Image 1 (cartoon, helix red, strand yellow):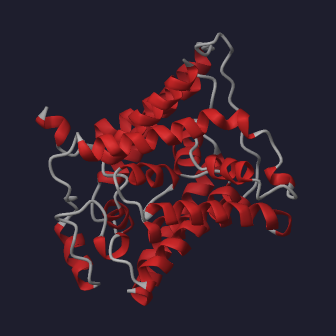
Image 2 (tube, one colour):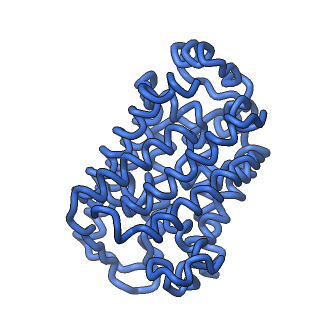
Length: 182
Length: 137
């Protein structure tokens, strides 16, 4: 039991993700979380005039159920399967974060400075970050699950290009833009 | 029955995202700083095992649980949409520290501020749908 309560090692976690992909394939579906955001748009009726959102969202209900399950999974993971909430990132990372005023990694799963203490800055960060993820995922036709896991597993060159893009964007944000933001 | 399978897959995936710490902003920051192998190990193992699984499905022409042959659609050939879309996604991934899967997991874990991120990501998807035809693909 204590093994479950500890953070899971990368080789176990990576394997379990591929199992998720496999079971969804066996269900006759494709693993990809971000298409749910498009389905949400259609469900809310905000895209009535746009062809991109004209489809029967009920056909995508299965994927919404997966997303709902992920919410429940997060609840179970955080409340019943964890003994310590801190994240043991490398000491170099901890030091580097301290320099930009983020000191909560040993006691919290997410930086409280961004996700719990609301300032104008932290709210703008959440809104802009979310917007870019939603916009970019649909522009690229998939996110980490659809491209990095499903697409690369099927040796798709477009997915490799998308994943390279993910990393260019991520590196630009952390190394060039973070010094301006924090 | 089918519904409960999808829900269970989601629960299993959500627990994995939380317990692997892949849903933690800290791990994403660490990954983009190349200061630990953790995230690379997770994605690497998932892809290597995934490639083997897909190859086996193709080789043995596996059928789904419902008896339908499993098919794979090749993604549309292009560079621009994947590169530009990917870069925009990456900027957001590093800033919010969460990709779409973990966003849902984190709400369940009690981080309700992620609802702001999900709402904003949904709005981003909406804006993409609106201006799609004006973007290079």
